[in-house]
Length: 378
Image (cartoon, rainbow, N blue to C red):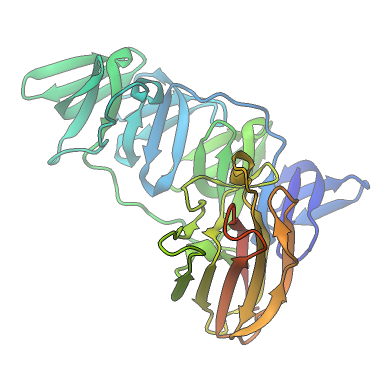
């Protein structure tokens, strides 16, 4: 596996031995050296996950978590799933926003807005090429289907007939305090919580939803930490945005954790869950208020350009209090990403990230500040 930390320019590469109850990763490097890496300093950990197909059901939970799997049992208070990343989980209904069946959405002329209505749960039932909405209160979910209490009485729905179920009264999100991890599975599952160590071939986690869960190590793709010695720049809002087109009228807006087109960030076939996706020319300025000691990031042109005739060419610049502190060489599409590790921010008031045009006008200038972080002042 590969681990990137705030205190080392190169990645740690080795075999995972264990994860401590405090989130410390114990790793044996290729040299045979054993290292203990505190979770507070880990930006991201990438696992050699096996390919994992998505289960037929998808749960969208409060707080942004997603779980894929197969409905495996009847439960009057929740949804029970078995999946690749999460071998077994029962999610209380009050933590679920939407239960959907992605395969059933395919082929529809119009995708319905999957939300509840006027304090009622909504069952979305497929009718050939359209969708019917039935309002009521979900009574039971199981492998045979969904039971809904409605104005027409108790209505059973087979899972094969359903597109989705939207729930009317999910709890408000309860943000996790302190050091916690976001785990992303190879099947698309995303779970947030506090790591509690390992058990067999699984990670143990106390989820943000108030219950523990096991996550299969061989189906975890990556995880990243929050609440440690750094903050992700994409979790902050810039105080100034300058996006200047090469040709009048053609502006691609920056996005947090996505490319301007809304796709996940990819550099050299590696997906980065956090970062900023921009298109030249773009300058983003952030208030620092002297709270940070260092800036670091992976930089490069996103893999999106592989499908384009023009692969782009840009310059990355980092300005601290208006003065240039870093300038990359000309970076072209399909090149390996570079890592900026040590831009000094001690006492700095502002940080500006600039992506400027290269020598190929603006074509393919889709640039990523991947896993961009601000290291906190001690």
